[in-house]
Image 1 (spheres, rainbow over the protein chains, first blue to last red):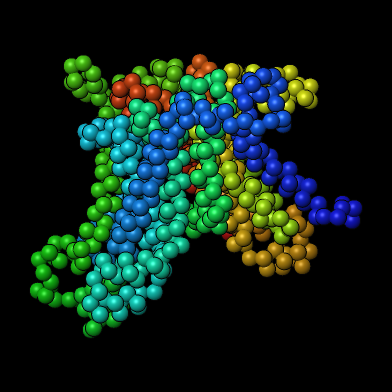
Image 2: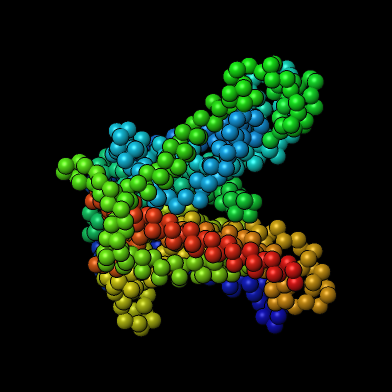
Length: 275
Length: 326
């Protein structure tokens, strides 16, 4: 309390500012060092505040590494998975929330149960299934297991249950089909829940490396995290380029986060607090 | 879950419930087989195929694989009983992996939860620039684990890393960091505390959401009644956070035991075998086409997870029950 009289600002700033700076520090260092030359980086002690900025790292990325390809692969995977999850999770969530069909209770319980299965239990058989489907070493092997996430089905089912059903009933009486009701009436009302599903799917698929590492072996099919991991072991002497690749891989999620911070934070918290 | 308007919107009230009698003769054959709304099956079909096909089927298949031995040359499989499991525990690489995973979990789970709680309490105040502080503190959640691994092995490089440069400035001798097995494991804990979907910031996001749900009047009433800030925290805030705390305890443990991405991005299991964790072991056995061993390893891990989660849930429920009774 005595501090408060001394300082022209709230004393909690003295704690908050260094803590938040520390959390952001690795990202700042990543960005700064991506603009350094290898001469500045490959010496001890390394330069902390560079005297001059270089773009050698970024330039050599496009010469020595297939960065555009990785970027494209990651984009395809994430985009397909987000769209597929939005469509399929909405359909399944709607059926579980509103339609009565034989076995719905059991199916829902089984799907809920799959949330509890540790993912490594399914790794090997899923790999064999992908092999049988001829998808190994293609983007399809990454995409197919993530087409529908049980989490999305539940989230949307809960959301649909909370919507008033009178509008849907009126539309049904007027001769609207189930399909049309879902697309024209229910989904426009469900934007916040759909945003959550999109955000989580994007984050998970863009950042995932364990499954792609198992099913992908040729560099032309690498996603960003895979490409960067292999580039790291290949280009030990070129840290500037590795950091530049890190920056470029982080930039899309970072920009998405800054643009829609509220949605991101709400999406991440929604699973825990409501669930 | 009780819709009948699909059938008789005019006569029946919408919430008549599943027990509403309806003459069976008026229902078509398809409806009698598939239930009242046969199209519903089309709605759930994609989800059912993917989720059942790639979760339930593999679950059983894995169990079968774990008691089989496949000859890669003759392409024959035969039943070997529990031999894969026995081999597993005779393999020092596997027992080492279990060991590393347990050590990692023992440090990571409490540190991340306590750190997250602390950060959330810090961020839960009305102060200028709080928006900026929250942005800075939450950003690490979206950083991918590979990037974390790569970035940390760069920062903590034993020769050119900036960490040694900073240690040098304050007069501490340079450390081997990732070149030393023990330090490498500690750095893995540090890296996953910093970023990713189970880091301190992630816990803070969840705690903060729960803190904002705690009714302000409760804390105010307590302080009017003479409770000190510490008393308010222990007797009002913390009990309200209990469900979230239990959730995080489970989530963080599961995430810790399934650690893979950061290892893949930084140490690849080294130096030597010192950072091989169980999922990394399974990953290597898939690469070596040793499916039997890999499947057995994954069942051992799953069994361990089941025990831990069950124990946590039980203790948490008892704790919660005694608290509400008191």
